[in-house]
Length: 153
Image 1: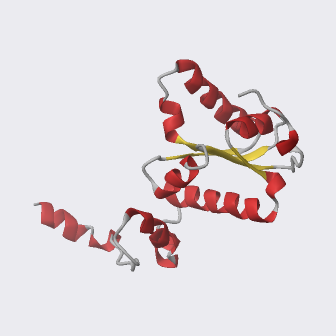
Image 2: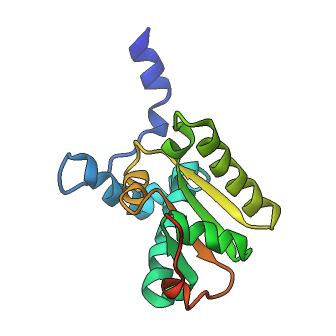
């Protein structure tokens, strides 16, 4: 019975080359044009594109890309966030107030017309985002003096 289900759904499978079988090479597979075309409307592809856009913005106009808790929350206060990137484990904090803070952040960004992407911490893109503090944003307008502002930690 199980093999029949596989055979009936074989049109959904793709054969894609990867340089190795390790988890970090999933990003390489997700960059493959064949995979991108097939997964066009999936959440993972949209998240991967958003993260790529963030890194691209960080390289081309770093005053329009921020990451880390204090910088992202400051950008939210200025209503500067166009795209918010959040890793899901921030919503799993044992501290209820901390969880509410991140939920409110997402609601504020959406309420101001921005987009919010919540990344799985188990996905390669979520791991990349987590390595930068789990929080990043692409801004509507530059905040060039952000590094000079002192934040309470």
